[in-house]
Image 1 (cartoon, rainbow, N blue to C red):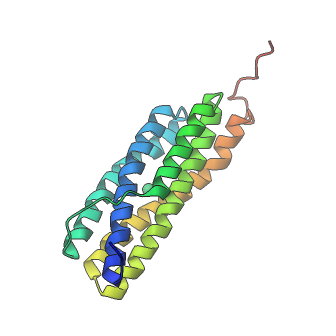
Image 2: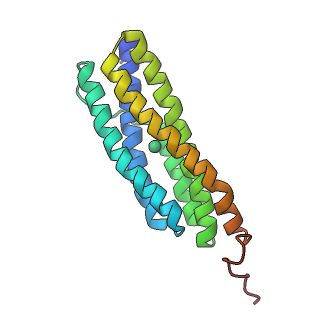
Length: 174
Ligand SMILES: [Fe+2]
């Protein structure tokens, strides 16, 4: 269906992000199963719980604009989740896998941050105060998670490279 009004654009993007959050929820569950670093696993676990709440918030946003929740297949999210799955499959060691997962998770959060920013602008233009509040709550969680993942990146990379101050094992000589 052609999109011709600000509301139609908003609802389309909302449905897109609603689908993306579902895809990321499943993607994070896979990441959490593969993560070996305790802190990384905890971060992912905490964000899984937040994502479940974010999905409920999006359902409320559909409600306040007078729509039923619906998923519009999000190709951007699909690509990010596939990319992460590929990296998990290709990592030769758990430490490498963790470093790659941290990067993949940060990319997902940035995708979400920009998507929420667009929706917030749309809700502001439509004067949808309740929707703005719900969308900002989700956006703020994504921003915090992105920062946490970014901060974890160098530590995970050093660990993967065996530079974590004696914690890592020397590679075995064959
Ligand atoms: Fe997120």
